[in-house]
Image (tube, rainbow, N blue to C red; front, side, top):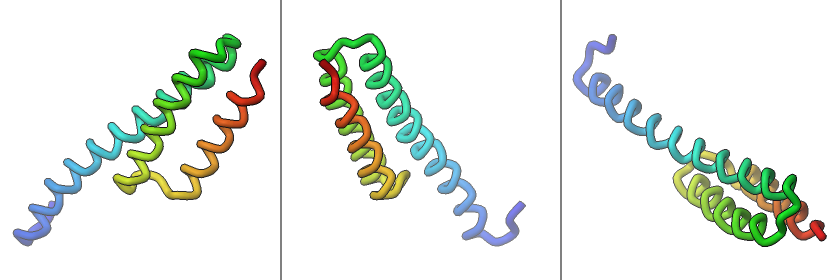
Length: 87
């Protein structure tokens, strides 16, 4: 347990940030999984719509500092290629 006043406050802010970061990360991962499910079901229209949502969630997570820019670029690229290669 922290002894100093500023350390006690830091514990509270870290806990709040952790909750927010987990929310961003969880919603991003769910959106990515939704795209992959739509790809597996071979529904191009649904996959394109899910891709749009996933890209938005991934970008928001990056803006919040939850994931790195490299992670964002890699995932957006992979998902877009998968959706575009569908028939």
